[in-house]
Length: 611
Image 1 (tube, rainbow, N blue to C red):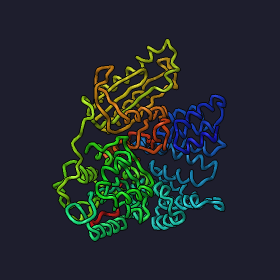
Image 2 (cartoon, rainbow, N blue to C red):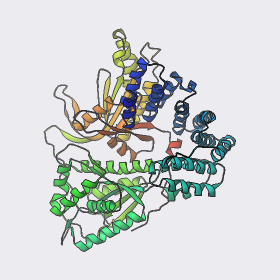
Image 3 (tube, rainbow, N blue to C red):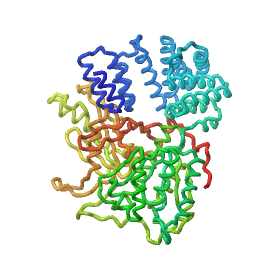
Image 4 (cartoon, one colour):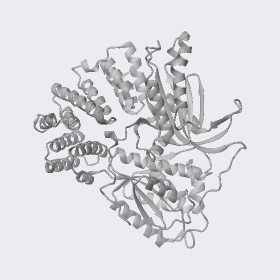
């Protein structure tokens, strides 16, 4: 069973891994490994309240002979601290530091020592912080069999210790040496940079010295469609060559790494080709399946673009088809794809502890571009977020024939397309409620959740229920996120013991964002939502860990472009249905505006330069 749990955990299937842990604990209730792994599943999925309750219920703090069990309590407290502010932050940070210090006393490891030092400093206790920082520098650690990653973390821990002791020059040189030991481990580098930025903020130090060590910057790209040849709306070979040269210069100047965007004829493909030639990771985000996009946005501009499209697609790290629509029917759908691509770039930058960049190929004056469409839409959405933007001048003359899609068409009378942020909610474990307690369950659990919905400042535009489940739809993704967190808190406030209900009951909330069809339900004779995106939202709920909010990548990406009040942490690529593609899911958590996890630099130290 352990192998199955580890496999599911490593694949990001936390709901299944957690369920397997619970199955195992029914047969082996004293197995501390299963208890430890169950708590890790909850922490990773963002269910911190449930993780804390399980940690104490399982009495993991009493298992003194296993370092993993010893450290998980400190890790949980650190997670709680980073999602808190004010006195709560200091209290959790101090408790985390004490836990890490206890682990170090028992294991002698440098990992618990440096975490104890940093958490003490963040809690405002510099004395203990300096003590544990010196333990990191002068302790005896076995490095004979260290891997490159282990050697990196050992050196990075020393750099952090020097920083805590006020020796900034040595901290800088030691950190550079750590990055040299494992140069391509960008995720590990990001973890270190994030921790150091917290510390320099507390210590009142300048953080600019960390900028040269940032991983390559994720970017979103977009630009005008054009054909090849002579005349209006086309570029000749010389013009395309100059455009490519400028794009290549910009990619190098701004240290661009992963790129995210569509793959239409013209600018998109030119940027994608230049990025691939430079060794950048290409992530393609399309509003419709590949054949539909190819026929609408590539083939009409010449067969040469088709071959280049296919070559880029072959080398792409990821190709996302956001809908199963066989047509690109609306501006709304195209803007949806652009929004998701922008959000993916921004989320990737957050993971890598750097700032994203947008690359646009456009004229200086886009006055002729329809408002809210295409490159102009992407420019405005990005600039509202205050993010770095680079414009590459379009070297030709735009066609007088606009590339805007035709007006939305209603394929069936009585239906209209709409963008909706959707939530599915379900009370896991409700089948364990004795039949005689079901009416009380409805009154004590479902009724408060319904009242919570009624009291929302931004209520859903559509609501439905069945049994112990609820379906809510919103105009805006941030409204859905706030509603999800409010409902999660409302459920957590219900005392199951007081109502003689099973304590194992847990609320699962799933979120998705995408285009739907609005029309009348033939049976209920009232408006309802239809389409594949509704089904995706429903299937995500089934794989959500109780106590958590799991959302799709589209939901998380759209939210990343509109709100700092939430954090979406990657869970994994999960099979949600036997006939549907696997979904990349994220655990959603609301954060106070001044939470430590919200610490961001307002601008990249690599300032944007005009090209």
